Image (cartoon, rainbow, N blue to C red; front, side):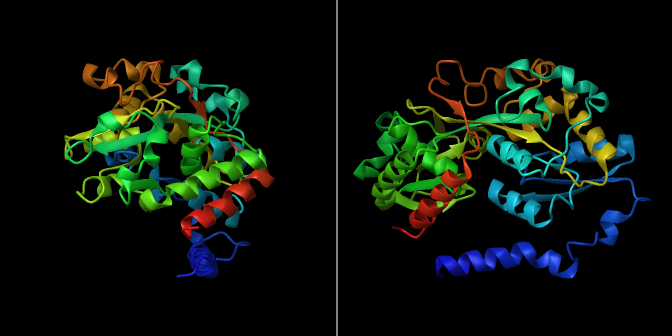
Length: 357
């Protein structure tokens, strides 16, 4: 299909619920104030079902839960809904910044969030959300290189720049995320992952275009492909590698010498959420130490909850895949939002890369 047709179909799919329920009217289900509920929109497989069930059992608040596979889908949908339709969303670092800038988020009421005291101050008050006015860290992690050591010699991979070697022709599985993919080329060239410089973005695109012969596919679930003999190497989030090692014991996570991508996924409340008190109750529940620890052990990503950290099994707490040493985090930086002009450039070049140009 043409790139235009792909975009057209995506827009129709995003709009389809709105064709039934116009933007200027709430759905009956969402506007039913007699029903105690909280409507959560989150990444796929990112909160254990037992946590949702225990929250409902304790509070009587029903959790209506739906998922997305990437930040851009979530962001486009929330913009189309003009901040309506959901009570809690879990965007990544740079999307928190963009959504707040676009007026899509409401400020949090910390009087309803007494468990905020459990969080690591080193992950609070960051430049993407000063004073955490809009966001509460849920889990944090990194984006690096994953390799199936049954088919890949990991001694040949020390950094992002090694992915350009011809030995990896038609073997790379890359994440289907423009900022994550541009991170590879930007760091390999010595640039910031958050650059808004047009020349640096263009040079990163040119470098990525030279990587095209090595790219087998872009995927929202790269480990499924890395388990196959035909692939074996690519990008991945660290927690996915941690969780997959039980089924793929030969899977290895590599911290590239140029620097991994560093991110925090955070709870936010959209500006036109209806069940605001229930949203705060849900977020506060998720900051309980025992709940935070359970989410880390089940999901494979690091908790920012210091009290929860102490409840983790020692094997989890000391696993460098989840909790890397400061040495492994050298040259890292949080992914932040970029200027509108730069974002259009990233999107323009990303479309060309996806088209094989």
